Amino acid sequence: MGDTGGLEIAKGTPNDDQHVVLVDPIDRYSALIVRGTILGTGLVGLALFFRHSRLFARFEKASHIPDEVMRKELQLKGKVREVLPSGVLKVEHQPIVNIPRVLSFRKSTEPGTLSVRLAGLDLSPAGAEFLTKDLRLQNKEVKFTVIKPSDDHSDTVDADVTLRKSVFSRTNLNVELIRKGYAKVPALTQADHMQALQTVPAYSRLVSRLLLSEKVAERRGVGVWQRDTWVESIAAYPSQISQMVKSSALTRFVVLVGLVSKDVAVSGYRLSQQLYQTLVVFCGYLLHFYRAFGNAVDKMTALYSSAKNKIAKR
Image (cartoon, rainbow, N blue to C red; front, top):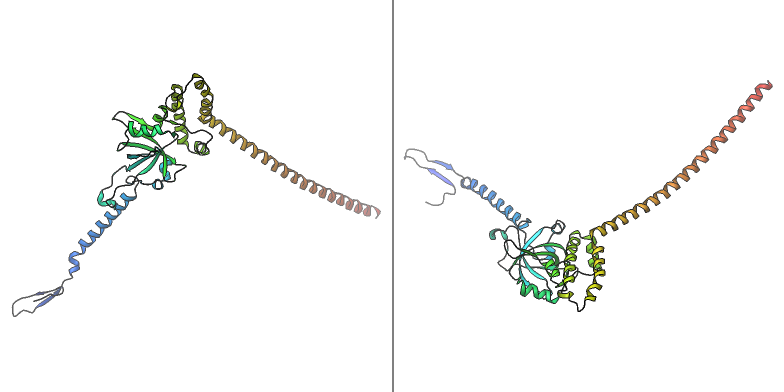
């Protein structure tokens, strides 16, 4: 006839009564709805985990990189998409595990790139040309360890970058540029460089390695270290040795011991002054108490003598 609205009529013989049975249509699909809800919730949770987990994170700006990555010196990987004339690498970061596109919630656009500067060196124009033409870094895979945010660019990071040339061959770009004379280690007169040496252990270790390579390049006279005479070569040794000594771990340890000893001595002197002042105050109170005690003894002696004299007169 028409829609019975969830009613089922059980028909019998003409002499039998008609029985009306009420059937709730929701009961037919309740189990399916519950299962679908649980499955959908699980998929949403899984998608959120994929999106926010470090394993699947893709960094496109320096501000996206957590401080924990720098502090633990975690190694990242990516592809060099461009080398700027300043030597800054535009790297497309690749996450540890690529997230499925279904769960990525990303629009079908080109991924952004990180601005990565080679840490611990001042690059020459010949060095930028070496990266572009000789090494042909564009579209090559690199691994890099972010050391610190760049001092002069808020959206750039300083990193220790390694290029994989073959299965068994890897080249550290920072060391390679210094060794070939295409770059120099910043001078100790630069405030940002000195502050990073004192506060960032990874940067200090990298600079120590670069100084050894710089010494080799200077001795060979390659790149920016080319000299006209042997006199210039000899004259450069004192400043180079001085810089190596100042930035070495042993020198920094000696400086640290000196600072700690100075602080301990100053704290001990101040503590001794406080103890002396406390002792003087305590002695003053003790002297006052002793005088009061002496006066009390004198009064008691006088009272006793007076009482004794009265008894003797009687």
